[in-house]
Length: 189
Image (cartoon, rainbow, N blue to C red):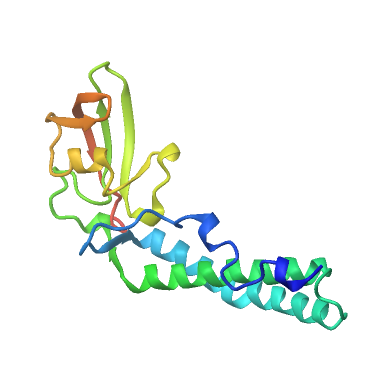
């Protein structure tokens, strides 16, 4: 097959993958818990020190085998290297602009701020338990919501017993704040 018909560039699949994480609001800091920062840092170190060198070794071996146009190890390896490099760039940028917040040191533990675990109920009486975390740490199905999510924005600064208004595409909902918890300070108190 002629090279003219083969799409081979450093940006092959960049557009197909979409963004890695939701963008931060303009001028906003990338707030992150200590655990979230450590998790991203560990992923970055794993990619740079283990996975990337391993893939580079496979690509180098595959390239030495001759014809690269039909060499699956070489083609897959090059694609995987681009994915790894893209993830490394993303993680590096996110970690550089991270503002690490330790929720256990929050002085106003009676109000909802970053890092709080909140139990609330909606108009239907259904209870939800969520923890407000950084954009890169959010896992809504596990109850970890981003601080820029509509629910987090609606409940921020509320206190136990407050009722807040949440505007959703389905209409307006009222949330009753039932409990607020922050992690304990490391070492006790």
